[in-house]
Amino acid sequence: MTQEQLIRPYLDMPGAINQGPHHMSELLAQVPKEKEHSFESAGEFIRRLANRVSSWRENTAENQQPVVLALLPNGATIEVHSVGEDGHSSVVIEGLLDGAHCMFISHQASFQVLCYTQEIKEEAERRTIGFHIGGEAIEA
Image (tube, rainbow, N blue to C red):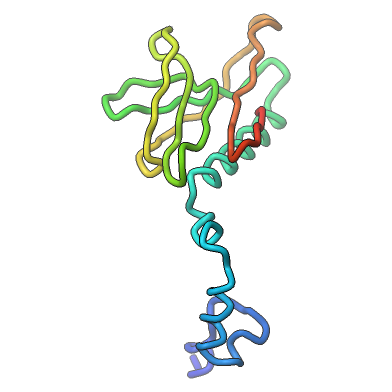
């Protein structure tokens, strides 16, 4: 392996590397603070989950539907009817816990989900799951 291959940057931003390290910090300084860590926000996590569930629904049989369960620290599960962001790093889940309506708030780092498919026995049973991100609603 050559010295050039070892030093090659992981990120290729035309013109940024050749201008020196001060140029990269100038570029990063122009990124608005709310966008700086958006990739790790609860909103982005929920958006990716919504996209996955939507894609999954498109690829399941007509008589099947996705179910999303939130796994609680005590081992209980909530059948998720909707999930939304609560600030930058928390999620709010609404659904059913042992048949009762509930709301659960969790930091996204400890939010665990299980997704599976369920047979639809009657047309009335078909339902969607709501995902809420920054005022935007996605039904999957």
